[in-house]
Length: 461
Image (cartoon, rainbow, N blue to C red; front, side):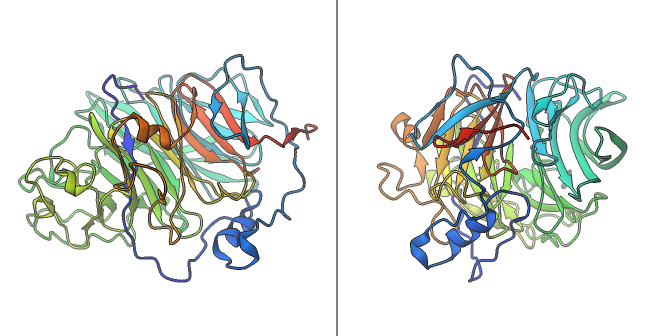
């Protein structure tokens, strides 16, 4: 992941989606501290939305992570929370995934090493290493964990590697044996890597349907998947893939050519398309709906609600349609496969900030204000952003924030209005930990977490 001098990462569009009522919770309630309280807090009309913290043992942080000295810590612009550095010494980390309460897999982009945090401590030796192509945004990019039993888990890795004279982005499936080893290594998706070298995407998530979702950028291609009606047929670029654990598309929405030529029939693995590049996807733990962050070029990063068949519009539309990213272009200029639809972003940054990951906090441990709402980070400035969902969870609530009624941050004042923290040094991943706190990974090699200021360090378990 490379910081762009012209700031080019992703923005948060507000797409309007129809959600059945009542809302259905797809959260994995046995994992995160306090998620049942999250469900009750956000969905129950009674008790004045009081947070039920009965599943939280106390206000004592009782785990094996040690708070590390930090002479220049990030600044949090909310007195109810504080930031702690819990891991340091990583090399250009891109993605992380929790194995259990205080064990984490963390990927290092350029050297292809998979690091293990075990019992809250970064282990000195990698648990896995592979040769990667690491020019620009290529490298070891994404991780997802399925079959989350205590003893055996499926671990998916997304990385860029050489294949003879070619460069490929590939997703492999491994097994975690519970003792610190990744075994196996079967290729499930063989994806393009050229021309690149940027816009490789790489982030992955296991959905509430137990399918693997993976995003790949457009790799500077100009095909049908980039909304060029006369371009090359679909080629696995600029899409969100939805596949089973063997890489097979199952139940995806795009079923025919629509207004595209008839050769555009290889669509079985695509959940969404028209995506320039993305370093962040997450599922709403209460509705099961996918959200993504998308990078623009010099302008219009986005945040989007991604429903089945979503066409994000690149490279004909970026930001709200009404802004006229390319003058005179409309929905009629998009490639419209059968089963597809376009929606405006739910939020946009007029000038790209290098938005990376987004996380919908699946916990009440930070307080009612944050439960079920959205954190996002950027790579260019090291800023952490915070957004509140609207009441039906189809977009954002920006009521009372001057200038954001149009859902676009047009200037520095409007960007500052949604900035929650500064000084992180380039954020690459954000996750809700099994303890219910927010973990923030940075490209300069640190892992931070947000905890309530009232929380005190407890005895390591």
